Amino acid sequence: MYRVCLLTADAGADGSALYENPDLLGHIYVGPYIVGQPEFAFVIADDAGIAGYVLGAADTRKFEGWQEQEWWPALRSQYPLYSGTSLDDELVSHFHSPETAPDSVIELYPAHLHIDLLPRAQGKGLGRVMLETLFAALRECGVPGIHLGVGEDNHNAIAFYRHLGFTELARGTDSIYMGMELS
Ligand SMILES: CC(C)(COP(=O)(O)OP(=O)(O)OC[C@H]1O[C@@H](n2cnc3c(N)ncnc32)[C@H](O)[C@@H]1OP(=O)(O)O)[C@@H](O)C(=O)NCCC(=O)NCCS
Image (cartoon, rainbow, N blue to C red; front, side):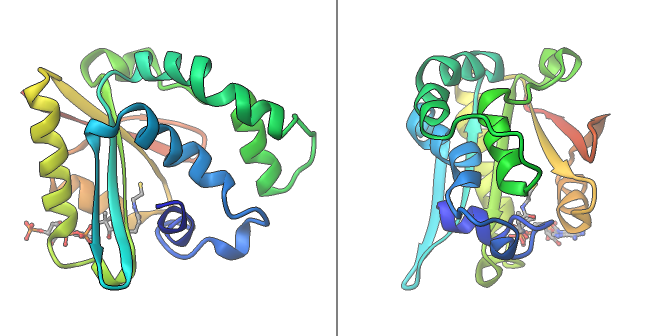
């Protein structure tokens, strides 16, 4: 799952060349979800291995709190803050001061998600199936809405989310928050 994250990290394309340490991204976008919210983690796999995942957190604020207690401390010890300017350094600084979703987004859309499929799994309807699977699990827990952050240059993903009913909620530095009601 960490490798799927890296192989889709450059606006949906292979990001391996961008990062020296191949695990840093996964420590942010994969690891805490499968450890902290395994009931909202789904993968697809074929004979070649894991081909994609969708990962959700039902209550983003609560999940952020859990990360502060259980996830970031070990990574902060392993990767001390270093004032470099590489993309790896940016990810390490994220471990030390993680970005949190704005209150205006959380209020109506308390859950959030990450979805990534390798090229061999894309364009076959699996992205829709995976999101609908996650939405069903969240609805069962009474979650009223969900948001996500997408890079503003990831035009394919933005169009996919719009097609599935997400609308733009807010803008970050180089990302867009999108949301959808689940009830
Ligand atoms: C974005 C992504 C999750 C979409 O998953 P997918 O399996 O390729 O999409 P699907 O085949 O399930 O498409 C579902 C629907 O969205 C539509 N769709 C997909 N891409 C679209 C696009 N670029 N524009 C408009 N509609 C699109 C499909 O036509 C399909 O419509 P239908 O179900 O009404 O017939 C997948 O391509 C991916 O993982 N890309 C690389 C990583 C990435 O960018 N992740 C998002 C990071 S924020």
